[in-house]
Amino acid sequence: MSVMWLVSAAVIKFVFYLPFVQALAVGACIAPTDPVLANAILKGVFAESHVPVRLRNILMAESGANDGLGYPFLFFALYLMRLDSAQAIGTWVLMTWVYQVALSTTIGAVTGYLARKTLRYAETAGWVDKESFLSSSITLALLLVGLCMILGTDDILCCFVAGNSFTWDDWFRVETEDTGLQETMNGLLSMSFFIYFGTIIPWSSFTSEGKWQTLIAVVLIMLLRRLPVLMASYRIIPAIRTWQDALFAGWFGPVGVSAVFYSIETIRQIKGHPDSNSGPVASLVYPIVCAVVFGSVIVHGVTIPLVLMGRRVKTTLSTSASSIWNQSGHMPFRSLSAWYRDKRQSKGPDDAQAVEPSAYFTSEGVDPCPTPNNSQPRHIVILDSDGGTKQ
Image 1 (tube, helix red, strand yellow):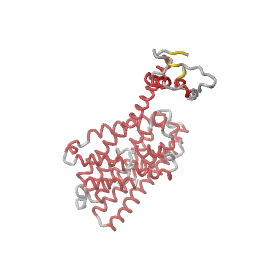
Image 2 (cartoon, one colour):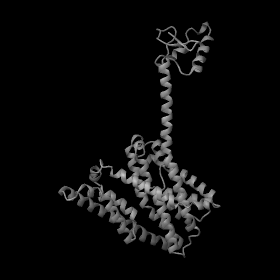
Image 3 (cartoon, rainbow, N blue to C red):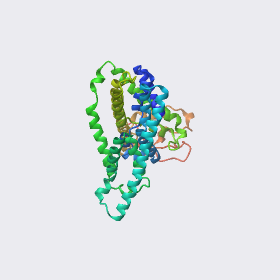
Image 4 (spheres, rainbow, N blue to C red):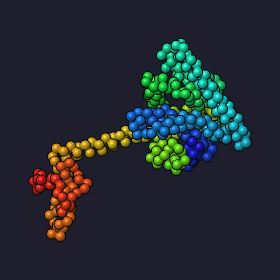
């Protein structure tokens, strides 16, 4: 994630001509991989058929952790914009890493553990019905969000850690596997986000003078933010074994809910500290983030359908050609067979040992092992000039 943060900040700096510290704040909003959109990609028929489990697991874990760990990167840039270097680093370590990250992690781990033990005991004793059992994870998430908002800590990271602690022994996942709860919640959250995001996109900002800069930034971020570093370092990641795995993991790193949240948090922090040297960050961060999220939703959303469509077209053409072959008994491509026939007729007497070209086309399809003229004859079908066949 550190590399994604620096790459995104570098693109913002050179495209919008911002100071690097201000670009770091915008880059921190774009860097995290969104777990809602990533889960939509990593679930379904295509992912279960073509993406290994090891790769799906590491991508889901990475997107969930990055979503909450965007706080330290964002506040590092925000503190540098309003404090001197030494004071900014000290405040960053104390307030961000100790209070927000460490405290949120502790609350999430302890709460998830206690909730798991309590729910398992209640389920064993018969104190909880099926409806309450299935809704327990949602109740736990709402409880933690409210608690973290009261304390001012990182609620996203807290919920992620609590979810891991809650399902640490895999008991809850196994119990709810056949209910479709996770799939229903994923679909509900994804559709809710898409509808909400469509209503808050600042379309008027994309028609201003900086529209071409925004478009260039979106394209560069999509290409450079994640893919090059994974292609270069996949050999040291045990779960990513081939360059194809690295290509998939590097391409499918969508930007979504967390980016919008961090952009709103950036604006709130800047407005709460008007003495900070933020420049135009407050006016630029939201349109840039919305443009990147919009591009990510479109590009990553249509990639898999395009791949499936290409495979379906290829399969349809292959099936059609095989059907024509089986029905007619000869090659469906008349011009190719005619070319071979003309070439055979032009051979001289010295070519007696040559392989008969039409022997490639048998009644069963293309013969990969044609028989020479002086060997034991094969049963073949030769196309005559009428387009018919003869033995």
